[in-house]
Length: 173
Image 1 (cartoon, helix red, strand yellow):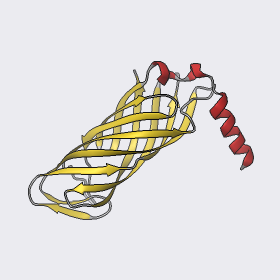
Image 2 (cartoon, rainbow, N blue to C red):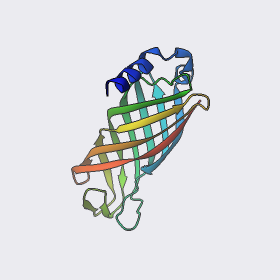
Image 3 (cartoon, helix red, strand yellow):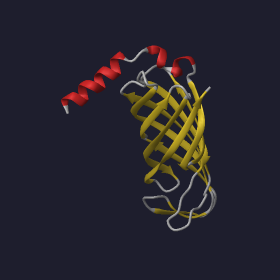
Image 4 (tube, one colour):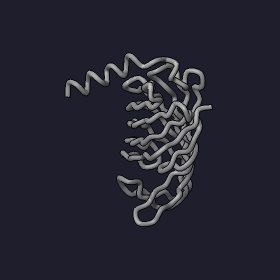
């Protein structure tokens, strides 16, 4: 364990700044695949922090996939270790953050990975989010890929805990 931790700390501190494409290209744009399905944008504010936005359609269901409505969300993220690639041009970090989302849900009954909820008429949807994810950056290609799990608390309609997440890919412009 100690040699791995020492190697991780060395990588974290000693990586050259020239291998950090998000310093000169801090905007990443791409696709989010899962819940919601749509576009994702990320803006870096240094080696540790970023804002991430997602806009798309919720995907809910148990045996059949349903598309109950749109969702737009923004999250503030912290990355550990710092988001810097090794000399090989590959970087890896974990991230965690907080955020919020808003959207709409059409009428019907929906299973959202935790419980079923029903909406009589189309309704406003709001939730608080706590994304946790894994990022892999390929500096030469200016690409970031990863997975994110998002525990959330749905405020409206039908307040309760829920869960979102999926895969993403972003290209830095």
